[in-house]
Length: 249
Image (cartoon, rainbow, N blue to C red):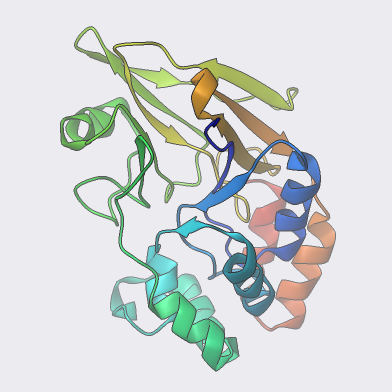
C-alpha cells in the first residue's frame, strides 16, 4: 500500500481566507494533513480555523500562540500586539475549541519516517532561522526528515557531507518549487506560514510531501487578503496585524 501524501501547514494564525486558498490550491494532491502549530493568534477567525482543524487534520503539534491563547503561557514575554491578540483569542474561543487547543501535544512527534515540531527538536519555542541554528538542531533529529514552523519563513536546511546548506523557496514570480530529497542527507523543512508570512511575500505558503517518491513541493498562493484585513479591524485587534499581511512581514 502506498504511503499517504501529506499537505503540511504551519502558522495558520486564525486566517480563514488564507486557509481556504490553500485548500483550493492543494485539492487532490494530498491524503492527510499535518499542522505544525499556531492554529490561532493574530487573526480574526480562531473558532472557524480550530473547528476545521479538529475535523480535518490528522496530526497537530502545538505552537506558542496556541499555548498563549489557551491561557497556558505567561503573556509577560509577548509583545503588546501579540499579547492583545492572545487575550482576544482566549475570550473568543468556544469551550470546545479552547479545550482542543489546550490539549494539543508538544513537538517533536514521530510520523511514519519523519518528525513534526513547531520550533526545534530541542525547544518548541526556538527559532531556526539561519544555517547555524539548523546546525545545532540536526544532531538531535531522530529521522532524516523533519518539518518545523514558528519562523513564518518558507524554506529550510539540508545537512550532508558535514555541512549545512539553505533550501530555497519559490521566488515572488513562482507559484511552486520542487525539492527531491537526496539519500544520505538530512532535512529540516519549513512549509512557511499560512496565515502570516514574514519572508517578504504576502502569499500563503505550504508544502506537499510524497514519501514514496522522496519528493516535496513548496507552494505559494494568493488569497483574499482584503477580507482578512477587514475582519481583523472589525474585531478591534491591533491595526498592525492587518497592515503586515499586505507586505508579508
